[in-house]
Image 1 (cartoon, rainbow over the protein chains, first blue to last red):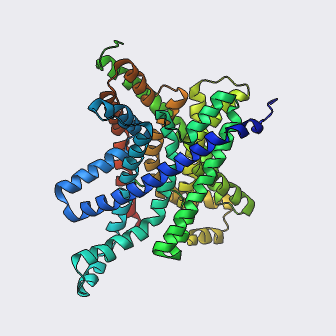
Image 2: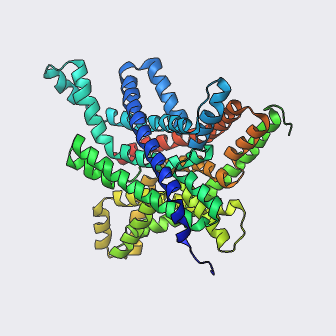
Image 3: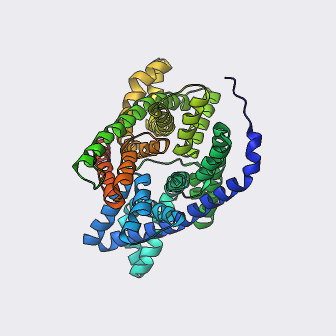
Length: 234
Length: 219
């Protein structure tokens, strides 16, 4: 191959790259916080109420998990204005990411809740805890601790999937890359550089989540969060 | 195709492009399966450098977006002077993507086979190859069935990303129809429904297999 790499041309586009990284980080952090909170609420609501509520939550989870993120983004970005709701590309990206992550978080936390042994709840009752105390200390917190590594993997996957938001013109990292490519025609260089940035972001996010896990749930959970790779949940 | 509303013609076009989605999925699963199997074997091999190389490969693939794999192979291949249709770049990148994940899934399955099985077959004076062939892999394969089917769902969904480099599969067909009809909500809901019709049965099958095989192993 007679091709000579010229990474030097990328230097003058630092600003685009950094603003892309910054938006990717913002979208990821916000959607993780919102999506995970929604996941805890939906998984709890589902296990407490049952009946129609459970059916609706399950339907939401199944629909989101069995359709592509890209199509979900299209529905939010192109579809909502048709219903009279005008959303910008950044807002659409955040809505899409939150909706997607909420479904996966609900599914993961549900599995955690179902893994809590009944005797634990009975023990809580025997200690005279109120129902709310039991739900908080005996069910939700141990359930989330148990599935924390799987949640972390899902968060990292979401950060990587945020690159797809460039398809609806959100100016995150992948969009910055495409812009620079169109300006310089150094496609290979820019995509190698941005791929390495994503790799660094993924490792950093994983380390940060492990630290948060250590603070919340202790060392053992944190170590699993650092090493666990995405699991396939059926 | 009429340019007015979303009707039977457009739905037919979506169904046709669904075939491309399925073809890409099959390519990814076969190509990714072969490559992933090799990486899984390397990941569980005895020489440490081989194991480390395989682990690094998996970490890298799982640490970068599928979109970047796609861009790198699309522009990389044309850089190398190969003018190839998007199907080739899409197939190659989905293969690489699938191999990283399948390798990790199958590593887990190989390592889930109890250690005693290795020891027992070793004491029968089997070679490493024979151990894999007759003792370990048949058991690992059984364990790997549910997560592999589950992963197929991820592959079907992720083929939609190939639309970004202009490969006309289901998601891209939806975009094209939307550009002509300006009925995004209706068009993309139908597109989503078509993906769902393919993915949901696979998800359920994966769950069913998990229950079946789990019940089988605890007997």
